[in-house]
Amino acid sequence: MNNDILLILIAGISSTFTAITGIGGGMILIAIMPGFLPAAAIVPVHAVVQLFANSSRALFGWRFLRWEFVLAFIAGSICGGAIAASITREINLEYTPLFIAAYILFIVWGPTPKFNKPPPGEFVVIGALQTGLSMLVGATGPMSQAALMARGLQRDALVVSGALMTTFTHLTKVVLFALLGFAFTEYWQLIVGMSAAVIVGALIGTRLRYQVPEALFRRILKWLLTLLALRMIYLTFA
Image (tube, rainbow, N blue to C red):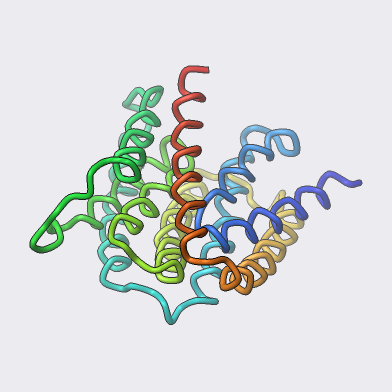
């Protein structure tokens, strides 16, 4: 089978998985891509494809969006992206994934904080961290997903709101890569094919999500977040 066709199929399957669980497909995809693309093209192409995957997932479930969280995240995302763009070459990124992993594990397994009202600016901070760190170290989507899960959102609101948040993370990355001169047009056929596949996958996964019981969904999400955090720790020391 042609490598491009295989990668397009994998993109569609990963998008279907993410539309059901809310996370994981993007990290699965970027873990597979090194065997198919030059190293310098992996992250930029992945960013474009995930932009379509997340935006379509948000569009298909737009009525479940929790705008009070999303808009705060977007404000932080813009700030985090701008800061990261200015310091990318000035900092040591080797152990940054450990902080992301620790945050996720605490949110999933730690004691649930008790607040009379939500901490001010919580999702502004998360937006800045997720987008800034994504530009520096790669996939950071589980950060917002873990925070939304801690708020007790129902699965549709959790998946769709997280998707729109991550859309802005990838949009920031695409703009940055374009400004840095990456030639997206050299990969336009693959990008179009993968983007179409992830949109179809998002639609299929949105339909399948309603077939998964709520309790099972939350168990899957909890353990998937944990596995992704442990993967970050492993890759840091590997």
